[in-house]
View (cartoon, rainbow, N blue to C red):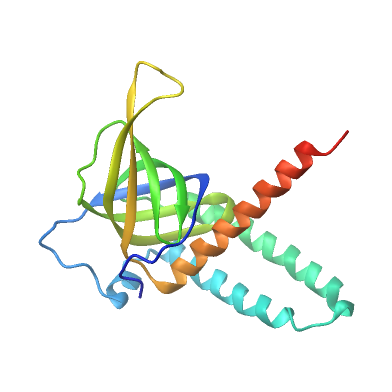
Length: 197
């Protein structure tokens, strides 16, 4: 179980985070208690992603003749992802919704209309739709700054950095893989934009 700040890089990418305030005097949940907090939909997604990761490790040992099998399995995986995205969208979310701007294995950054107190602890339900990441963790506000809204220059918003204080190791792995996947997609788009037409 991840309980201390391990430095991972953070990637810029939009996502949704639902925050519920956690009392300072209440201890953080254990690993088992954190798992028990997962609603059925999130538990299903977590199990599928874990099985998929194990399968992909085994597929790497196959030779080039297995490429068509790998392609077929990727297609099946994509179909399952689409169904799971639908399941995820039907879930009821506890807490206040915030727009996320950056994520990584160490924490997240979110935008809000009001300031959050440094040191405030939150239960976080995190959803990165494009990467099919959905998890519950705990995080503390470590930094906060006022910013000018891009859409409404006269409106002040706040950028908050939250570091994970309690998150399952498998969820850290999911976030790291998702950040690498997003980075690869961003690099590919930049390369395509620079390519001569």
